[in-house]
Length: 151
Image (tube, rainbow, N blue to C red):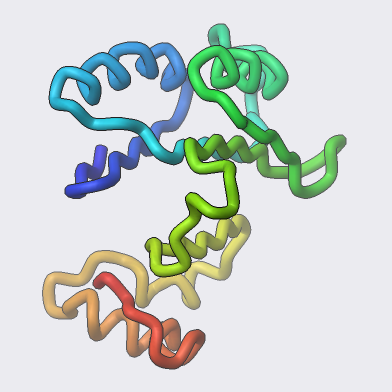
């Protein structure tokens, strides 16, 4: 779990039933007067779908669960339905164009599998290297000149 002033990120694996935590997370947020403005849920297709627990047995069930908590949800699948693919769900409180703020934070996320281990070395923890150095060594720094990178 990664907690930021305006964001909560949960990363799980295996047979974790992450969506079953949504009611509790919403209750906690409400108890401290926080309002959920945006939800983004994504996962790769399961390697062992038969081992998953409800509601994670199918993306359709996951979407139904998320839709029961959030209005304006949209679900997408990117990749081969009969092969490797990613499932995405996004729901935003702000749906009217006049409510959108052009200066809001924008996230660009890249999801990759099957990467060359040697090319991944700059991203492995090394106590002798700072995150800023890893950003430079990996070449990420030059992808979007002028972008603010949170190392």
